[in-house]
Length: 127
Image 1 (cartoon, rainbow, N blue to C red):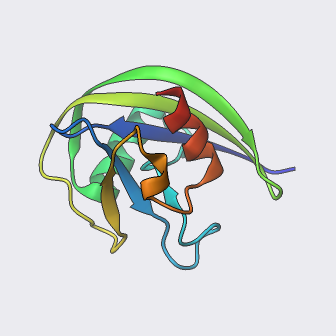
Image 2 (spheres, rainbow, N blue to C red):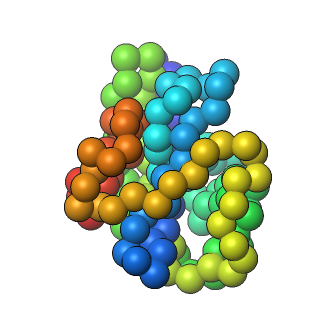
């Protein structure tokens, strides 16, 4: 079975809400909400992936992030290994660079956004 190695970043705003994005059309699980991040490229370190993906997807430059946990999640089609980071400081303004929908989610009310990608849901529950 295929294994995907990816990173996820948890970004809070001043209201203690978490940034989530909606998966674009044509991607697996399109239309699902998720925590931003992406696949680790060959030769890339996870923190480099985090910085690259956040700049490419939502236009921010990560200044400081702490590694939180590695999560393994089994989807029917593949296994994903997610390295989860908490973004402590960044520069720039969050905006959709790829046309994806973005939202700020209250971590105490996960039902605000649906459907939520199962692996992202597991991460949010840990927070």
